[in-house]
Length: 302
Image (tube, rainbow, N blue to C red; front, side):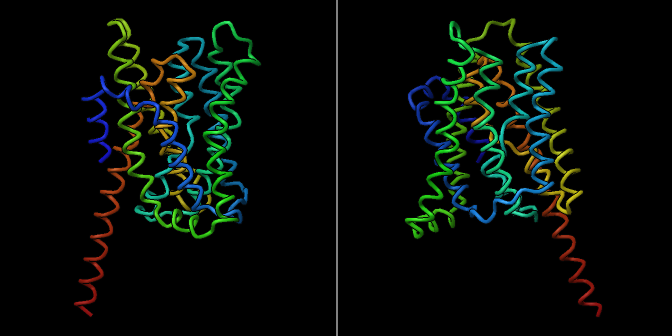
């Protein structure tokens, strides 16, 4: 479904601007569905959460500061790929791979809250609006980002308290976020393609560089996440928490608050992390099938 969504976005990019305004609402709904799955009692911080958050926030900032002297756009592209929070669909993929769904869902919430609080000052510093002071730019970004990310969290807790049946119904239909994500992907990919198509030919090497950089970041994040998860007994959850990103939000942030060409990095990340996930699921299914066959053969012999 995701490759089909990307293809539709590419083929019909000229018409995507008619429905582009829906992006914010789709992100809000996806986050609300995910947050309804997490209970207040799940809010327990520990070394696992802090290690992953450190890699996400401090890693993004460090990468930006190191790359910035050489290329500002590449630095922003790498930053947004690392800084971007965990995908709302990550718990679904984690469950398919045999990892802890609750761990990933909880970290997804923490990572989104961290981005909501830190995105305004960081993005305002990187790309201040023309003619506006840092404080003015900070307020402008905060007004756009904070309600979008923290609003669903507040609404989920209000529904849990006053309309528990509705809250429970949403919580038991997590699969909806995957389909909403696919539709949102059509919009953000279409917007990105339209922007890239408008760029002069001399921008092509930079776009290729952003795509290649996002590939390296994707592989590194999955590897580091797996390493951290292994320290706490769950490699799969660690890898998915850090490697699978909410690229819909990342592309929207890049198009809205950074140099729009930077959106090529998270747009390419869509392909990279879905390729990694496809391989992981394929490998997991093969191993599981082989184990079942071995158990069946041992049962016949006994």
